[in-house]
Length: 132
Image (cartoon, rainbow, N blue to C red; front, side, top):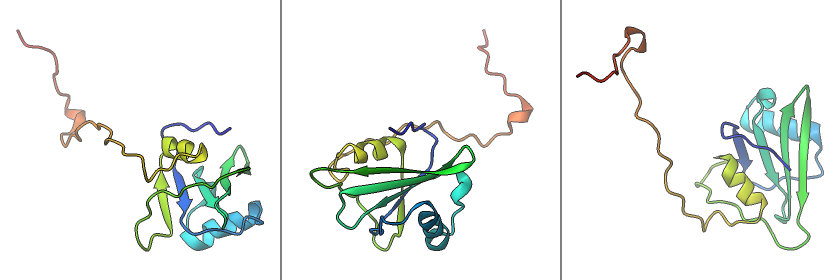
């Protein structure tokens, strides 16, 4: 089981990959296809041609880890992929649902609330106390 925090970056390959590749083969794919640093802690997700197997590559504690899952029945469902994209970003909740067999194309998520960006200089000190 993977433990995924809310800030972890996850990249999903949109094209099937030959899952006979091991650690080194997947690292070379990350470097050659996407020109991304495989040592960054990002999780790289690869599906096989039959969509019944998935490998997740990431760097942790001085070495590469490959998480591998094979379904006994059924297939994984790819999320919606923009035309021409070679990879898409996922959040931890989406990856967990994907690995649990949820079809992300059928899931409708409401946008998460984000606080407004402040443009002021925080070093000037803003007095937020109530005035009587």
